[in-house]
Image (cartoon, rainbow, N blue to C red):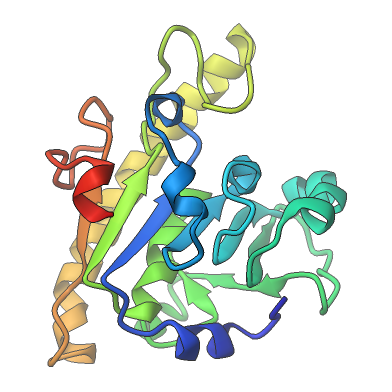
Length: 224
């Protein structure tokens, strides 16, 4: 497994599609088995690595999440690179386990979409979308990006109780706002960084998602 993101980027530049697997309940609506084929470029967020163990990249946001899942990741993840932002602590990752990414702030925002160690977002899913842009794909396909509960279920792989529901509803609103800010920023600066490369088109495969910024008219079969 690689620990150098630049090596992975060089290996996979200009794919037609990058599939990003989130954690929403709509995951249960889809047959994700075709994405086990490693010819498809996939980024999995948090526990979604359990659904696609061979995903190209497994990304997480919080150090505590990694600390709780590191043994399972080591046993079960069979892809190329684990990335994490280490949020919530000053502790550092083992150099041979996780490629550490920094998040955008006021001081470094001029390096957005330039510095391959820098991603945008206050949540794992948006960070993964930001990360995908370094590969300059034609399309970025979001799967399980719901930002809403369904039948009192917040995630497609883990049950949560009512207290968790209130917690997630609060953060989903912040996440949706952050997506809007990201979309404005990428639209404004992509052309100046990559004048000869079209801005990646983003699709959200859940037509009932609270994230309505992106085309929701496609199905997984349209990209396979």
